[in-house]
Amino acid sequence: MIISVASGKGGTGKTLVATSLAISLRDIDRVQLLDCDVEEPNDHVFLKPEITGSEAVSMVVPSVDESNCTYCGKCAQVCAFNAIAVLGNHVLTFPQLCHGCGACSYLCPEEVISEENRETGVVEWGHSDGVDFVQGKLTVGEAMSPPVIRKVKEYANNDDTTVIIDVPPGTSCPVVEAVKGSDFCLLVTEPTPFGLNDLTLAVDTMRELGIPCGVVLNRAGVGDSQVEEYCEKENIPILLTIPLDTEIARLYSRGIPLVEGFPQWKESFLELFDKVKALIDERNRNTER
Amino acid sequence: MKEIVILSGKGGTGKTTIVGSFAALAKEKVLADCDVDAADLHLLLSPSEIQKSEFWSGQVAHIDEDRCTECGLCQEICRFDAIKDFQVDPVSCEGCGFCSHICPVEAITMKENMSGYWFISDTEYGPLVHARLGIAQENSGKLVAAVRQQAREVANERNLDYIISDGPPGIGCPVISSLSGVSLALLVTEPTLSGIHDLERVLGVCRHFGVPALVCINKYDLNEENTRQIEINCLSQGVEIAGKIPFDNVVTQSIVKGIPVVEYSDGGVTQEIEKMWCTLSVMLEDDSKG
Image (cartoon, rainbow over all chains, first blue to last red; front, side):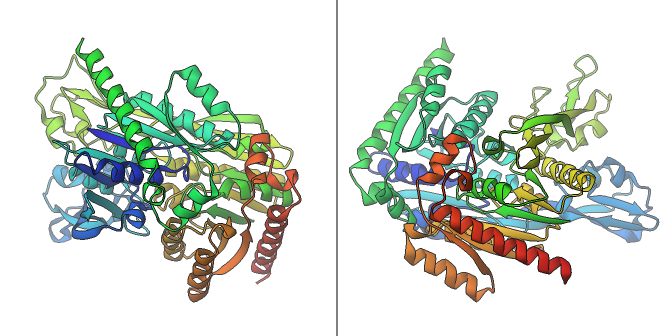
């Protein structure tokens, strides 16, 4: 089972929810946490995992053997991203623009374009006291996070394990890449107009992708009641409410998972898990029918 | 013309709160919301839209079923797993067009993709350029570039000195797109271990692209030990701290009211943001003289 933890707006508490859920589950189940927020991965701050292995993430980019190139221009013509250009008797490549589709090398009539690897990030794995841990890190200065996210997800062990995915904020390609294939998505938000606006975008994204979702309302008690009204109207369950509490914020600031600082929260996270599981089961029954 | 962008690495540290306040404090400027994934600045500025334009970017493969012989070559060569059972999954399609070039019966065409909207609006604080990326769309970096381009045009037309941009979280494509070529980046962080970690990475991006950066520590009194750590880290890298904003619920209250916090309260948060804008505007002035 794969449960994603996402939010349109950043800083609403994805990392708090993902890490506390993983830690709560380790006593009852095999659990794996994938940190797919590869631009700013933070789960490691809370889990302090022992990293036991790593693998570079590479994109393939073209390499042109100009000694046999006829400068016909086919490669530049087929590249949708302007990542290769032919100027007179020169071929210029722009690796940062390349999406690694392979069209230029495949379609080169002289077969002078080969592919080489360009490192854009790293995937690391290890464990932290009963939680299997995998994270991706995009190299600083690189633009494209989806290939790093894709690589992290290759390490998902979905057989007899609950996989929890910490998703980057937003609603565009990195989010899609991270949540794709999830059985359920928890959307973490806060009860403010910003939280509501970004929640509606996140809900629309999950609906577009056909992934069932529920809400975790964080920092409840400040702000207004519009998020609750929206959830009621849209029939989206609020599965867990975490109050605004300076003590919780202080724990977070020190990198201590909520369920370790306040073990009484473990029960709430296990209840959250049971609710998610029930919703997934219900959906599976409905699709079978 | 000077462009300043507010970034953070970590989300939810207070970028929009600060940009909304700068909107109220700065004169002669255009506001740009470059967080096109989850734009919120408009919620503080009550904009009235004066122009709305479609944003066309990228392409999606389309298979003509009548022509397709189901040879499977397209599925074999697609590296984005975007074609299954001779159907294109538009969400996975990267728009590279490889399939359209190799299809032996020319059954695949690439169709332009409308991936969002950008808007020019008037607000009581000046013009605002903002955007809305379509649901689950790609190319947020290009939409950011479009927003900045429009903001520059508005600034030229109306003879305005500054562009103040609300940036996206993270360090990837839309961040790089909102950062390239700006005069100054203000990085908003918070005194949490996550905030410290994320600040280092976004500082790295600024350095990589040669953009001078200043740091603002929001909610600094939440953990003063971490705040000191951030100050030490910045000092050691020669990065100036532009301001330290205390934690105060007036920020959330002002968001609920839908107005910039500096217009809602005159307490410590407002004073600190005012001081910070002074620091930044002096720096930008000096920069233009130098």
